[in-house]
Length: 297
Image 1 (spheres, rainbow, N blue to C red):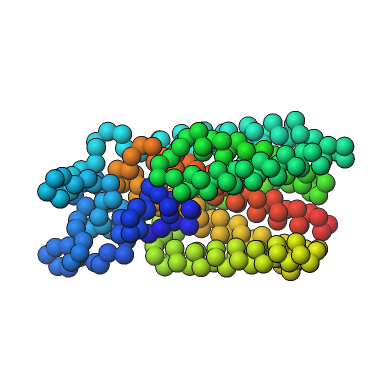
Image 2 (image 1 turned 180 degrees about the horizontal axis):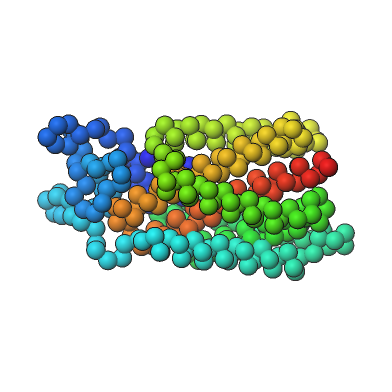
């Protein structure tokens, strides 16, 4: 099963024909289904005892071998790498807020730096998403530049549109992360192929509508089709946050399965990168929603 996150879907937790072949047939009585084999090494993800282990190596005769017993990714690795990546983003965002003023005399310069940083961060994100291996310097550079963009943008919204919006967006993002994690661990969210298909269809529709709205705004002026202002803007802001929550659930599933299959330790950086991208998505949607709500007061 491939994640909505481009990092996971391109590399690492969804190798070859989809991660661990979640589309495999159910095992027949007395043995595994035709075309599949049981995972003989480590703990298979819940509900998939016969899924193939994408990290199991083969010997010279084609027989599967267990992944190395050392150097495997653990939850501690994911937590530490994610904390490091988010820490860099938060520090650079705070520095950008403090050192790049958004008053009338400096707004154009600060905003230009922010836009440039955001574009470079987007390029770095795409480069890492399509690399075969995680590059910690590249991931941290992405986080630093994304932090500059978010810092200036948050300062603009906080000073000119909705006072206190940045802190509210941070708290909202933390609340969504905690709620999804609790719901996922409690089994209230079942991440399966149906869930994945629904989220991907919704995400594609959402992105397509936002792209059309942007084109109308660029060439027609104003707010395009109005998807980012007024009542429609509030509706799409809520939808964007819900989609971000679904992305988090998919990311949690991918990380959990990667640990169960003995993914290499360096793939924790991919997990950190993917989770950071999802949290940035949620924060941006919260910031936009708060700006609309308070801007209409």
